[in-house]
Structures are given as structure tokens and as C-alpha cells.
Image (tube, rainbow, N blue to C red; front, side):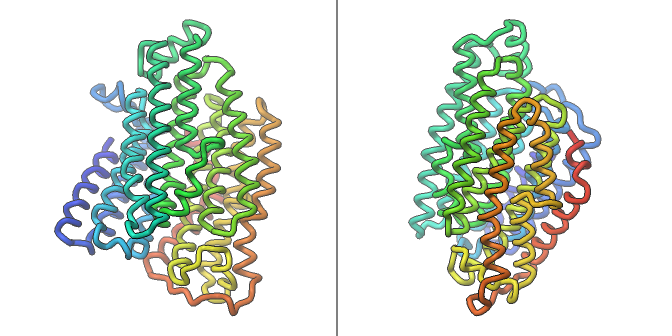
Length: 461
């Protein structure tokens, strides 16, 4: 709870700092607030217990919530490390942008720790509403305006579907509390039709939020049209929050409700893996490729939802989201530097980059290898953990996931080939600000640590 309060007050201070034109304070302030919240969450993991009774019916800051809080704060801190460069064109609204990021992060923390479906709904709205504004923050850019409108419309529909599902579950169980819902389902021994319909509608609403097929239509255009920093935030923190909430809800409330929702999740996971990976092969725009990459990773993460409640499933989800988030932020950091300086968002922007800027090329290569799950990177261990927990009940889906992981190597390696094997004369001179150098170095160190010590995260929850 303390981390949540720190982020909230940091956001309020950022608003006033922007109002009084203290722009030079904003990045240090955001990093300091995120760092303090991160430190508090790390300390609390070792002394975690349910929060005091005043909040016990709505929020519970247990090890699960605190671990995912650390993931979100770490990804956000890395993104803030890029902000002095990434927010250059948005100097008039700089304070607002930092505040909106932090308010959205507060929503993510609520999604990690909810024990009541009302708080789940509030967390999703607190997370989403600032992002509708941030997606359209480049007001003179038609693509940014289009991204904001599409994100808002699809988000509104998804929220409506989710809320309808919550209402049906409440009508069937007379409770919003996750543990009481589970108790009612266990006592009845079966799921009434209204409860089953409510669970499926909640599943659809959350699938929209995590951009799983066939509810992914908004993601490619929104990721492409939004400013790169906002895209990085949506691809990491928002997806982590969505899956953490997904897992908490289904592992706590809906176990014992029947196999119907597992069949639906398995179908969604299979469609997501096949469609996202095959479509990503044909992309030439880096951000659009990363959008389909993000969709495909939703398919892998669905394996943890199918294994909800089994030993190791929560740890596999935590480890994968942490590795995926760090690698994705590193990839977008490299892309931000290259695309902003040569105004090219296609793969040709990376041609010969290794000869001009070996640090950027090395970081991007590590990020691509990690996302592809090439051994012995942390991405390989992440996929291994997910495949292991899901294999016993869904071996066919794990085999499909392995095949699609092999397919994904093709489009990730397109970037590496462009950097290391394309003609040097096509490369642009790229300058690296010191803040981004530190961010890239931190990302590489974190990926190395996760590669060397995967069990330390996997066994945390």
C-alpha cells in the first residue's frame, strides 16, 4: 500500500511541477518516486502479509501482488530513463505526461492486489484512462489521434463486456469478493448458466485488455500510432497488469467452476499464437512487428492461466513477464534512438548499425534473442517454465507453442541481420544520450542476472 501512495503523491507533485514550469525536475522526480516505491515493495516482499482490516475486503498486498509490483515499477523506471529523449516534442505538457504515467501505474498496482471485483474494475479504469490521453499526446499527428480514438473505443467496449460479466457473476453468487465467489461455486458443485456466461464475458473483457486473438484488432494500429514511450508502457506494464489480474481472478475465484472456461482459454491461446506469429513475419514496420510480437506473447502467457492454481504457474507467469518487459523496453529504447534520428520506422533503419553504434546493436540483439527464447537467454527459461506447467494437461497446446516459438525466430532475426549483415553505407550516425546509455546498460545487466538466476524469481511465488 505504501508503494501505491508514494506513486500517487509523486504524480500529484509532477502535475504541480509542470504547472510551475519546473520541467528539469520532472525526470528526476519520476525516477525518485518510482525508485522509492520499488525499494519499499522489495522490502515488503520479505515481510508480506494481508493489509490491515480496513482494506482487507478490497486489496491484499501479499507476495504475489508485491512481486508483480516490482516488475511494473522496474519496467516503468527503465521507460522513465528514456523520457528526456522520448518526451522532447511534448515539452508543453511534460508534467501532465509524467503524472498520467504514474496514475496509470497506480491502476496497475490495484490490479495486482485486488480481492474484490469492484477493485478490479476500478484498477482497469485507473490504468486505462490516462493511456487514452497519452496515446493521442502528439496532437498534430493523425496516426496518434487515430490510435487514441481506437484505443478509447475498443477499451470502452471491453470495459462494458467485463462489467456485464461481473454483474452476472454477482447475480449468481451474491458477492464481489473472490474468496466468497469461490466458496459459493464449491458449495454448489456446478456452475449455473448465468455464472458460466458471466465468467466467459469476463474472459472476453480481459482478453481485450491483453490483446489476445480474436480481440486484438486494436493493438497493431494503437502501438504503431502512439509515441514510442507510450507503446513501450502498453506493451510491458499494461500487459503485465492484465495477466496478473487474469491469473489472480481465475486461480482464486473460478477454480472448480468447470472446464468450459479452460477450453475457451486454450482456443484463444492457440489462435493467438498462430495468427500473431504468422502475421508478424510479413511486417516491415518495426513497431507493427513488435505489436504482433506482443500479441504472440499473450498466447504464451495464456498457458499460465490454463495452469492456474498449479504449483509453479504463478512463478512462471512472474518470471516470463519480468523477462519480457525488460527485453521489450530495451528493444523500444534502441528503436527510439534510431527512428527519431533518421525518421525511419522500418527494418532498413537498422542497416549496418553494429558498425556505427555497437552498444545499440548489441542491446537490440540481446533483446531480440531474449524475446525469441533462444538458449541460453532468460527468454528460453521463461518459455521453458510456461511449457512445463501447462504440458501435463495441454500437451497439444505446448507443442503448438514450441512450433510458433520457432516461427518467431524468423522475424526477430530480421532486425539482427539488418544490424550485422546489411551494408554499412546505409547506416545512420546515431547519438546516444547518457541517460539512455544507463538505461541500456541496466537492461543488459538485468537480462544477464535473470539468465544466471532464473529460479530466484520463479520460486518467489
